[in-house]
Image 1 (tube, one colour):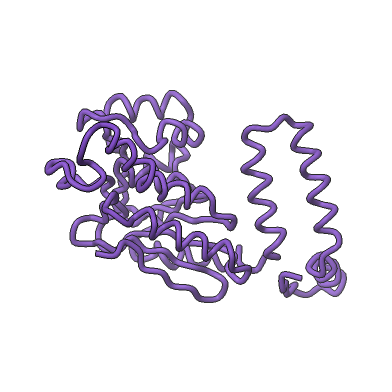
Image 2: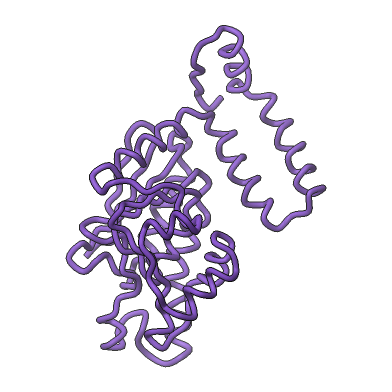
Length: 265
């Protein structure tokens, strides 16, 4: 069954994990290619200014396909080198595609986000949770380790100690705890989740597309740069932005006391 449902409207693309009957598991053959194709298309389309990632049905994603693990099929079958390549060429392809999105990404976490599903949500720039959402990185309970870079992702969001607590205990936390720990920025009723995410995406989508993408890049690069390096990158990027039509539109709109209309020029 195809993994992704893709819809685009008003400069916003919504990616829906669409295997609701099995809680949107990941790892089937072709999942990496599906994400890579979708994210490549988004990056190539300057009309897209924001992406929402959510899950169909009652879960965001239950993570890796447990049935496939039990049967040792697909990504989880074969020799150790074959399984290793399965992660690199499929599961990691999903993660690299999301990490490589040049536009802001909002995860609208509608239900359980477990294991790989949690790490998928953590790749988003912003996370909004339904009050039905739960989060856990339960790899050790299955006798495996986080094979998707989760030990790199999660500590950057909630800190080393809390990430370690989740990894080493396999505990699952509710939406209220996720909010307290800074894993999500807001929690809303289930019925309000997509409207809330769409309203945030719509606000982001009013921003100038080139500057928006460069701002995300500056935040991303800032994780591993010195302050001096960040200033140098900002100076060079800012010089380009000052020469755009969108910059002049923003200045004119402020002077004329009206809302700007950015066209990507």
